[in-house]
Length: 330
Image 1 (cartoon, helix red, strand yellow):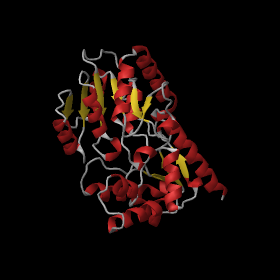
Image 2 (tube, one colour; image 1 turned 120 degrees about the horizontal axis):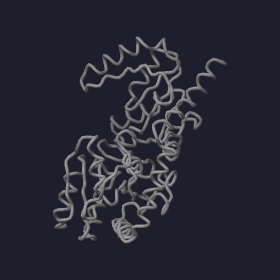
Image 3 (cartoon, rainbow, N blue to C red; image 1 turned 90 degrees about the horizontal axis):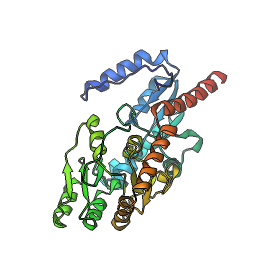
Image 4 (cartoon, rainbow, N blue to C red; image 1 turned 180 degrees about the vertical axis):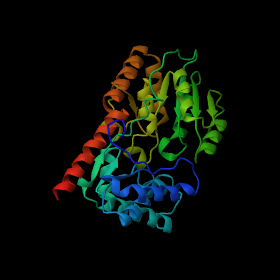
């Protein structure tokens, strides 16, 4: 937003402790009469009602995800009929109802909210996630001597890391590097052990600024491959990071992915939850360096044309300007 020329009065607090909420609320009270619009970011489902209680200013909510869909449907950490599920669904609906515009990352995600929570579609605006191009950008350097397949991210059902491991079983001569932690990490390690794989290196979570060095060594980078509902709704950060780095991308062929990606042009799209399809896609790119280069270059062009912070900031400015104009007109 700052890159797009928006003056931002920042209420956030960088340290992750109890004081972040106290200080954030104090800043909000201090700034709320000096701004035109209140912007509530992720994870703001519980913050929106408080903001609405203390101001009549217009609110933009960057919802990013559905609490219910993430906690209950995808990660299955709460029962569908339980208290947590009920609270999650209630907060999803309430936070959207109390705001003037809601940002979500794909049209598929918007359709889910409209269908699940009966919220008017005009309230939503698709805002691609993008990534920080001061961290993620093409670098000069050479790939590792070995042909390496790279994945980084959380070990959650939507990512489908287990399918990457099963694909690695079919490609014993190709090395895989997998970085991250999360719910399915232990089961994925156990799966690799049962399959007697020696072509996968698991790395613990590394610092955000260091991740590009791992991608630089890779020949192909991976997105998500799960078979869950959420996999079909979102385009995760890692996809944009790969595009920004100018690396060839393979990810699941989903309605959300097809909103910006074209198979064979700026990415290779394989069947979700299908290790055979993933393995075939890897072999196809490995055996066709011209196609790898084409996909990497087109992917980076897509990022530069549609996904940089400046471009996304300008879209936020456009939405905010319309809300401000409507507020003054009324």
